Image: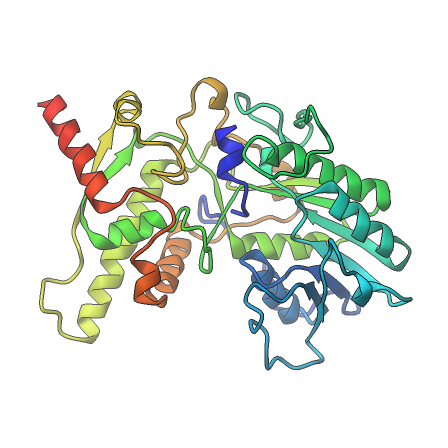
Length: 387
């Protein structure tokens, strides 16, 4: 499905301003030894930083291909790095060594989960698997953790794509529970956002507001969406581990509260503020800030123009038909268990600040969203139609 394709890579958060749980103090009880499968992509490093701040002992197991030098130079007492491949080489994990917790951030095929979880089951106490809200069988309803999950016609499929992603994630959850019954926590994030996101989903909007001018806004300001800041997600994952909580949690913005109007207003507000601050620090050749305006274009017209939800206009899917439940996935259970949120403005500001640090050639080729020429053409067509 389109939604499954949209989330076939990890996702962000911030819905409303709630107090964030303090993840900087010492962890209760003795420090935990945590084995992280992955750890150097987007979510992993944020979890590592949260775990270090809490005094836990962290071991990273990965192929060393994504950001291999990400934690070079760190104190050996903080982070240990093991090289291997969960598909072909688990030798670094063999033997009698024990860990309190395994965090699986790279579970896409159930066979891969079974291989690792079965090997480690006698030597670990808790297994946390990062799944996705894409596991649900239907998107036309407001799902909660008890909703039916997707079932694949061929459970043995090994190609991960928009049609198989959700069903494979559901099988990965099942594989973990089979290997370690009663010792598994499952985290199902929505769209993970924030500094470090390499997909440019959500990032498109702060960057677009920073560029200024007329912005094509999808649908109506009341259209719902859901995202979770990667740092809020990492803090919640660690909290679940520390509490030895073996349950399934949706991790996303509170259902039915975050609108596209709020997201775009935050992006405009933050971009204007950041540009104004820059001009205070150093004289600007132009007036401070890049003024922007929003033009809300109806869904039907966007369809006629072949503007696709999520890819062309990220973080947005019209809540209709098969996707009538979009933006309404329940997170009540997670909030009751300790999930909290930083402000949306903070997420937007930190995302934009991070984007500005990237090389110019990377910023010239965003991976999601409408290009300037295409956006201008659609806006011109809409104004012509609207008179």
